[in-house]
Each structure stands twice: as C-alpha cells, then as structure tokens.
Image (cartoon, rainbow, N blue to C red; front, side, top):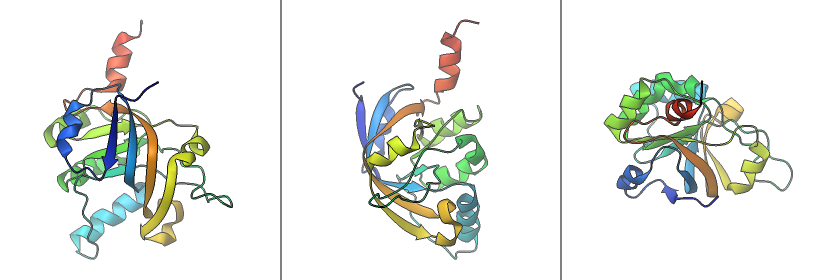
Length: 184
C-alpha cells in the first residue's frame, strides 16, 4: 500500500493536517514525543507548578512504552498503547499546541469535536507488531523522568513510520465510519 502523505514532526506547517482524511495511510518522519499515563500526569502537574517547561507546539505524542532495546538495537518492541486511556488529558495537551496523537483503538466520541476545534489529528498505528515497528526508529532520547522507565517522557526519531488517520481535522472518526460500512 502506498502512503497518501508523509508528515515530518514537529510540523513546520500545521495546514498539512487539513489535507488528511479518515482512513488515509501515511508515513511519519522526524521526532515523535512518547508518553503514557504516568508521564501525562507528571507533565500536567509540572506545567501547573512551573517545574517543567516544554514546547508541545506542532508536536505529536505517540502513546508508547517500549521494551528494553536488544543488543545492537535503538529500541525494543515499540507498539502503541490504547489511546482511550489518555482521553482525559487530550484537551489540555491540544490547548498547549499539540498537533497529533498516535496510539491504537477507538477514542471517546466527544473527542471528535476537540479535533475539529484544535485542527488536530489522531493517528492509529498497528498493535501487536511492536518488533516490526521498531525497525522504523533511528534514535531514542530521554527528555524527563527516566526513573519511570518505559513511561518516561522521551522522543524517537523515525523514518517511514506507518500510520492511519483515525480522526481528522473535521472530526470524522475511522471507527465510526468503518462500523457504518459493516453489515449488521
């Protein structure tokens, strides 16, 4: 399958997100932020007490907690975690300028409006193939809270990382549209 677009993060021009439609297969290049539940809580509390500063503008957060890297590898298995666990944090991160999130699975239907409002996208990547996805990772760097292990805030540099548009800037939802096409 040939990708319809290639995005490079952080985005230079957020307008490219408007061209993406639900179900589009795309690839990603550049630096992706990686964080899960514990890190989301830490980031938000640290931003409130001003003990942490980071620019989320035009960035993507990949909901990821990798396994340790085998010898000679940059990262271990790096498959997505279930995105709905981060739904409660999404609005605050979008308000900070976040352009995209990536994980696996359906998100709460109320988030479709947030994607429209903030002109952001949710990308889906493939669950169950974390070892395969690790081949697209060129570098990994810890940014904060390394003591949290796989839940630390880190970033990965990727090349041709595969994804599907799950929620577009119009608020269309891949899971809603695909269930409407499936016979009952």
